[in-house]
Structures are given as C-alpha cells and as structure tokens.
Image (cartoon, rainbow, N blue to C red; front, side, top):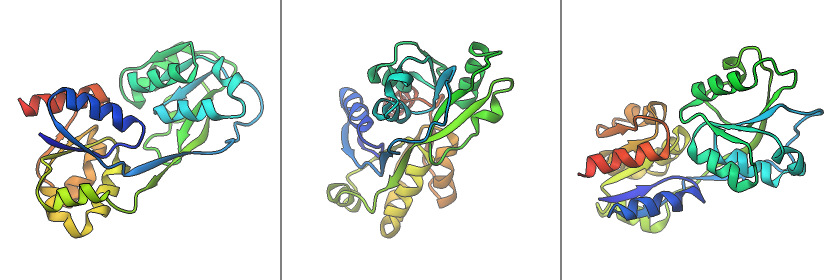
Amino acid sequence: MRLLVTRPEPDNERTAAALRAQGHDVLLAPLLRIEPVPNADLGPGSFAGILLTSANGARAAAAHRRRSQLLGLPVVAVGRSSAAAARAAGFTDVASADGDARDLAKLAGKRFKGSQLPLLYLAGEERSRDLSADLSGVAVRTVVAYRAAPADGFPHPVRAALEQGRIDAVLHFSRRSVETYIECAEDLLEQALALTHFCLSARAAEPLEDAGAEQIHVADRPDEASLLALVARQAS
C-alpha cells in the first residue's frame, strides 16, 4: 500500500522503516512538532519514581537540568516504545505496562503501594487522562514536560500525493494529530477522508468519525506494534 505516516519526529522514521520492511511505500507528514518545556519546574523534594505515557517524557527528562537525579529513579512506562525511549535516555530501572493509561496506573499502584514519596508524571500539555485520579494511595505530581505544536499544512510532496490520489491509507497515532490532519486537509477534505485510516486508539479515531470518514480501523491495543500488525492484516 501507499501509506502516509503523520507521527511526529523522530519516531516517524522508525515507523516508516517498519512499514517499508512490510513492502509498503511510505510518505511522512509529521503533523505535530514536539517541543520540550525548558527546565520544567519539578517542584522541591524527591520522588519514588517516574511515570511515562510517551517517549517524549523520557526525552524531556534527559534534557532537564535535574537529569542526574531523574535518571536514578525507577520508571513505569505505558508501553514498549516509551520504555525503550526511557532506556535510550539513560534510565536503567524501567518497567512497561504494555497497555494504556489504566494499565500504567495499575502497574504503578502495585509497585509503589505505600510509598511516602510522590510519583513524578512527565506529561504533555494536552492529555486525555489524569493519572493522579487513577492511582489511589499514591501521590502523583504532574509536570508538563513537553508540548505538541501543530503543523501549518502538509509538506508539498504529501499535498501533491493527496491531490493526485497517490495515497491509499494514513496512520494516526494521536487524537491531536488527527485533528491537525483534518485542519491541514480543509480544502482537500473529501480526498483526505476517503482514504483508509489506521488509528492507534478509538479516541484518536473520533474526529475522523465526526468528520464523516468511513474506512476507519483501530488497533487492538494502543501501541505501535499493534498498529503495524493491523496494517499488515488489512494489506494481506
């Protein structure tokens, strides 16, 4: 298939490589630009551990002025990709919940039950869940460590491919990127919605449903491996 990947850099390159290995043609349109919050205020004191719902949180930690303190803490990550990013950033004690935010809260609640120190959640500016509400008995300090800035439009080769019908399907990794996709396709909306859409989660798919897209497929689990497996099944 001829696929469009809307994931932000640098993770989009890894996704594209995996899709090309499956035999697909891939175009990249990073519709969000991830910007770390310089020296995000973590507040005073120490932490029992760190919660990550995105690889971007791990990268923000690695760039923070309190990096040496943070890297010594245990990490509970939402999935394998965020766990791998944490290890690449220098964390050594990393566990993956292999699921969604609820799975992350469940695993963290078991591991840090009874802790007198709070957990540090390195979050994005926009998020769908409040982890502190999901974790009973463990305090959570949520710190905005990164932001997602939307693109102004499609890269020229991608726009041309849409206009000429040279894209079969799109991979969407977040609700925000889907919303940006629809905004960027304002004058090409019919073509953009008529494609097959592979979405990481039902929440990410909602704006497409509301806009009238009909060919929407949602991954079994909200992780890259499941989304790639979905594409492989549909292509076979």
